[in-house]
Image (cartoon, rainbow, N blue to C red; front, side, top):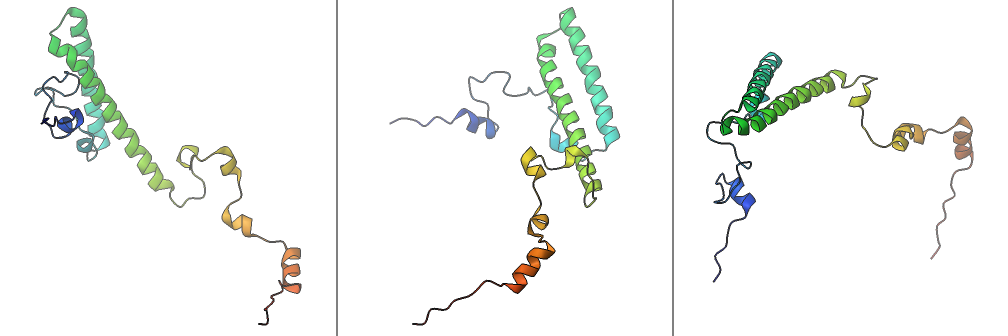
Length: 153
């Protein structure tokens, strides 16, 4: 009878670290990782200040790396770099979201806010333009409607 071993991802999802886990899979107790959901509620000034602090911390860690700092500081470089990336991502996403709100319903939008699609699809006629008919075609349809036949049983 085999004992079912939990999958690595299941263990990580539940918050338990597998017995032979690598140090890259989880942050240590003193390395409080910045979460994107916590950043989303903050104002832009707060985010920029936090970004500046993280950049300063990263430069200090890099100096410590050159001067031969502790191993804990070396492993923290990765965490700080990822935190900087998270802050920048949140800033950019909120900026884009605000631009989308601003340009909603306007006739012209910046290129990066328009739907990407393909080049051919962007050049295609829209639904309304496809259904337009010329005066001549309208007249022809009115004068010569489609004949309808009924079969006598």
